[in-house]
Image (tube, rainbow, N blue to C red; front, side, top):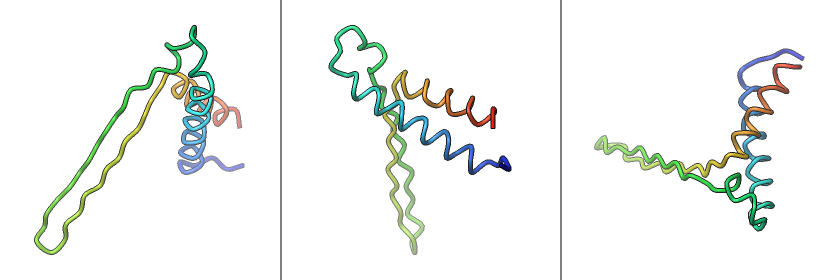
Length: 80
């Protein structure tokens, strides 16, 4: 398989999604709260250009398990 940036981006997205799902499933386990604690990253660019007005809101909830999922996805991509 040919490696390119889009495949890496897909792997990173899927790894982050998998980590977030595992963090959500483990949220009720009392001893693993350090893995499931999330930090919200919020970015909202906007502009008023007289003929074009836009507002974009992007939010990410990042946990330690999401970072582990991203690292695993990059490792799997490199092994391909």
